[in-house]
Length: 261
Image 1 (cartoon, helix red, strand yellow):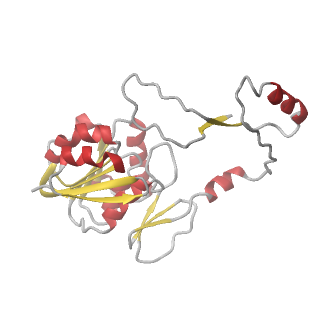
Image 2 (tube, rainbow, N blue to C red; image 1 turned 135 degrees about the vertical axis):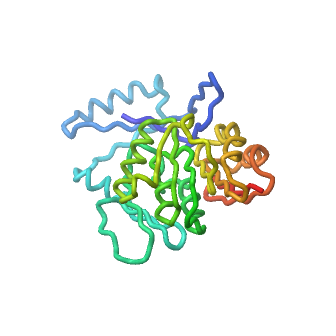
Image 3 (cartoon, rainbow, N blue to C red; image 1 turned 90 degrees about the vertical axis):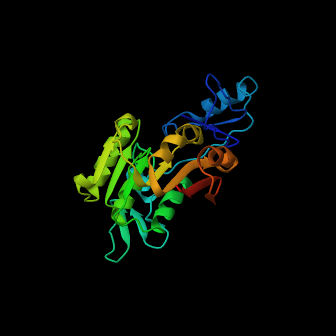
């Protein structure tokens, strides 16, 4: 049984102690094929007023190889002109494009979300050859790994979630990244150094709080890339982080980029 918001209104950053409730729900239930449909219909009809049921839809779900159906929903994705992400079960073409192998998993960031896509498209358009890159809130490690594939000298991935750090290392190994080129750690364990590129694809609230630290982590002339930001949150981010910035929007989300003077 699954519950969904009928109005598709995401709750991204509730205030401390705040409990937001959906006004209308879509409840989806899957039953065995030998379930007594007449009894189910009778139950729902008698409880319609009590449960405030607006409508009920019944449909037969055809049996299929669900593992294959799940895999088929993920296709190769292109970001910019040269950067591609392939699920591991696809045959990888032998061409000049830059390719990452990345499967959906527990950690956020496979390129399907607009915020990740915005960061990958930015990376594709940059020359990061020989540069040091910090991926703050690394999730799957996709940004750090992409930077290394595009020529970065070294990448640091940091996250508060231990599963994200494990996923980053696993994905780096899958992409034949030299372990010496990618280091992962918790934020409090970050080395005392600065980077040429600092990327943070997290939510707007933490970005506002972290803005001074992220700017301080940049070398003079270094580039800051922030995403995970809804369009209406742009002002809060730019006021907290950058005087000179560029905003790029994809769907409801934006990417903020700037250079440390």
